[in-house]
Amino acid sequence: NRDSVWANSAMVVTVSADDPILDQYRSTHGTLAGLEFQRDMERKACKLGGGNFTVPVQRLTDFVKEQVSTSVPSSSYRLGVKSAPCHEIYPKQLYTALVHAITEHFDKQMPGFLCDEALIHAVETRTSSPLRVPRDPNTLQ
Picture 1: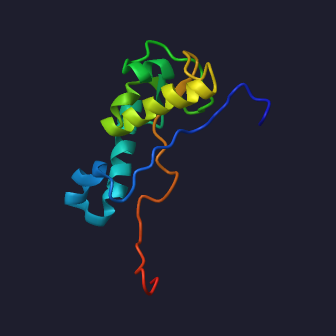
Picture 2 (picture 1 turned 30 degrees about the vertical axis):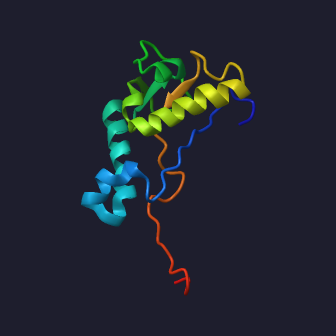
């Protein structure tokens, strides 16, 4: 609905198959490390939300400062939102990449992007498959 009061978007950070972030998962989950990493972030978000499909949220200004929001604006998410330390869900490298994108790119390209009314919902992990099936470079099988 284009005439809604809500403007929803997602911020994505790439985690490649050989990313050092996956090292701790690789040792116990092997080739399924990406899948376990995805599940781990989803479990953390679920716990912060209370486990009942309530989504943990944080004002974008508080996310950047690593502070829990004392209050949050309304959201389009129908099952409810709960103020939580969303910055704690992500590994430090991902959090740092998100903050850099927010402060050095988004807010400079679109002044006002980083504001108290902007609300980050955690966590979107389903942008692409966490599992890669490599092909043989010669046979492509």
